[in-house]
Structures are given as structure tokens and as C-alpha cells.
Length: 145
Image (cartoon, rainbow, N blue to C red):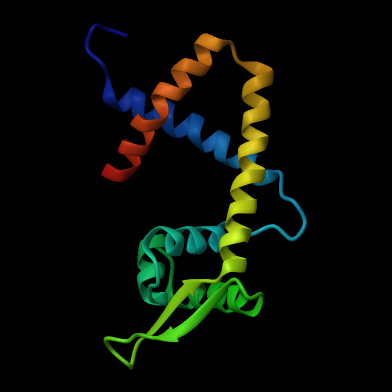
């Protein structure tokens, strides 16, 4: 590569490696674990607070019908609760229950342990420092897309 950084090559390398990491983590599914759409919906509610089904669908870039099915399943399992919007009684807000918050924490914990073990087994201290430094940059990149 020349002295100038090629942003297209960097983008390709990042998408390839991050995509492979996510696929591997997703492939190791535990029985009864949250699906990706369920986790995404719960994570969004955890981050933003009570919200509408349509707002979640827009955020996750899926159809309202698909999000509705996901939310019905979460509600049936007691992970999400519905309430009337106090500012507009025609709207329904969805929020995490304590059980939903715990399920999300458990999911994050399992994934974190899985990745932490792979890091401990496969990377040098210097490589771990590089990965730690890259994490906030990747987060900033995600916020700009």
C-alpha cells in the first residue's frame, strides 16, 4: 500500500473481518438463547427506553410486521411489556421488563465470555492493546454509518 491510506481497502478489510467475527459468534447458539432480532430489539429498548414497534422496525431496518412478530414473542416470554403512551393515548409503548433486562445481560455475558476466552487463548498482550484501542474507533465508525 502506498503512503496514502486507501479508505476503500480499509473498509473492505474491516467489513470482511467484522463480518466473519459476527458470523462465528452467532453460529455458536445456546438453547433458549435470544435470536438476533430479539437481541437487537431488547438492546435498542435498553439503550433508548420505552419506544414504539414502528420506531424499532425503522431502527433495525426491517418491516413493521417482522418487528411485530419479534415483539409478540418477547412479550409472551415476559421480556417486554406494553403500555399506553402517557402523551398520546393512541400509541403503544414497549419497554423491557426486569426479566428482559436480565435476559439481555445474560446474552451479553455469554458472548463476552466467549470472545474473552478467544482473546486470552490467541493474542499477545501487544495485540490485545491494539484491539482495545480499536474498539472505540469501531464504535465511532458504526455511529457514522
